[in-house]
Structures are given as C-alpha cells and as structure tokens.
Length: 95
Image 1 (cartoon, rainbow, N blue to C red):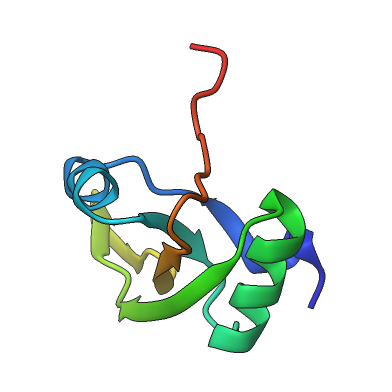
Image 2: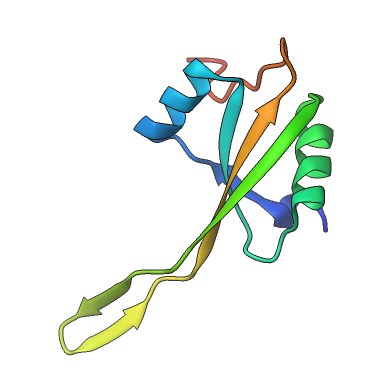
C-alpha cells in the first residue's frame, strides 16, 4: 500500500494531545483496510522514526439526515502509534 493511500491525516483532538504529552504516542486517521504492519512501515518511511507499537480502533460511520433523506458517513480507523524514546513527530512545526 502506498503512503498516500494508507495515512489520511493526523488526529488533533483533546484526547490525542493528552496521550501525546503523557507518553510517546501520536494518533492518525487511517484507511479501513490497512494492517498494523503496513501502518508501521508507512509511518517509519514518512517521518523517519522508529515505531515500537501500533494499536488500532475501528469506528462506524454516523447516520446523518438532510430533510427526509438519510445517509451514512463512511467507516474509519484510528491508529495509536507508540514511538521509540527520543523520537518525535511534530504536527505543527511552523506554528
């Protein structure tokens, strides 16, 4: 799987920033079909860091309505990436 299709974006949420401050973890939004080994190799290639552990969680898309019509948001996957001691991924480097 190519790097463009595996990692969608970093998740910048309150829980994600708390996890990042307390331990050496970064949270990413990942495509649903991506395995942990693929996630590990993509993150190591993109950011030049050493990944110690990858934990994933699958989320169902929410049902949304617009008038009488209802639909669903797509399902998505979250990955908690634990980095080696001393490695960092800076999401907002220039700010």
